[in-house]
Image (cartoon, rainbow, N blue to C red):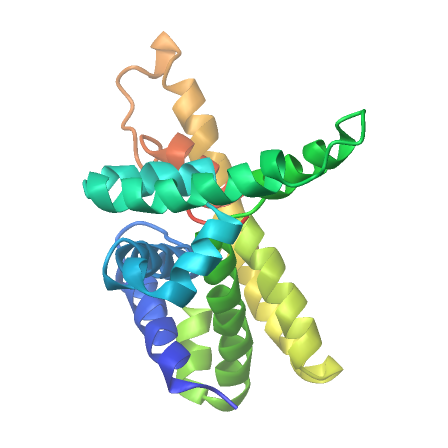
Length: 234
């Protein structure tokens, strides 16, 4: 069953993508919303909640999210988070009896810290709910199926996720229908993108100087977003 807390932002993201002048992936929009909300929370009141601090001390943050936190401008708040997180790292890596003569246990402890991020994990949980609910409302809501069909593109990473969750959440007949709709959206967009990038390349040939750019001017960043995802989970 769909959860309203997720279906509202899903519909809003799909509406925004449908109305946008430029092709955008609705799931990249959802990811950015989740990321911004999580950043605001962790740098705000949640920063001082003991259960949150226990988790941020334990999990830490990836460099990308550390950078985003630094950009928020709350340097004292970030310093307080770093103070307790560094103390936890110090305890786990250097103060516990991990040294076995070869340093392997210390390396394992550092590896765990390096590949853990409180925000990535929080966002990953929420985006999973977004996929689940998207499949459910596609199956049960005719208006949403129309909205889905009117999308101009999904980035490739999110297209793959849609297929995975669709296959898991729909019976074979309904998944076949879902797949055909999603595939048609992607094939149309990648054909257009291919033409735009090709025209972008040709515009650097003097023979095409006087020809109009058409939709090619921003084709390179659009291609990067399509191939790798403008905003995607790790």
